[in-house]
Image (cartoon, rainbow, N blue to C red; front, side):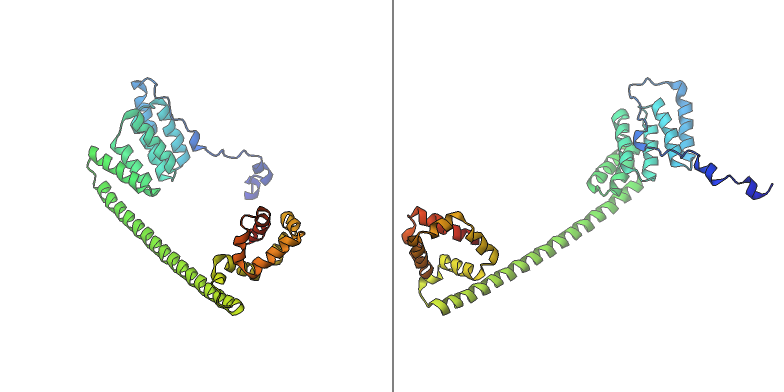
Length: 278
């Protein structure tokens, strides 16, 4: 028989079922109220040993999960699965199993050390240090002592970077605000010069009301003009010759607006104009 005769056809392979993807979140966590059965302990320990030697992580997780179901209140099996999760990058699941271990069997050096490592990787440095320090209260460990020193260095670099960013942002903000103040001052000076050139030195022309009106008149665009032309209150008032005369007077001398402050009809219509330039 030739090699080609021994090879399966592609269409035959297409019919084979896909290997199901393991949903690690659905792995059993066991019932902590389960009665301890010493007769099963050796079997569970053997499963643990097999899980640690397996190359396929998912198979190892399934194997150790069976041991967890047999002894759900035992820290050794939950911590073993947490270690496998950590080694394969499932840090949140590792933290969950460590928390279950502590909840069911009390704080242990192994569970606290694993939690510290997970939090360190997740850049939760405060929580990492807290876990490591608690672990050191249970057992001396040079590795943890060195890790804590490294984390403090990370925190300092992180703080220095944040401080540099905040200082740079503050400097940029200050420069922007200073530039805006300079621009506004320059624009104000230009407007004062134009007002003086067109209307003379009368103090009333330096008032905010006049300058706002002057600025509005020079900056009015077609859209604002169109909006004013459709304003019913203003259009109704403009049909009154007396209002138009008052408006012309205010346009010549803004201080005249004070004379009509008690005229509700005039002020209602006049405010429609001012409202376009807020």
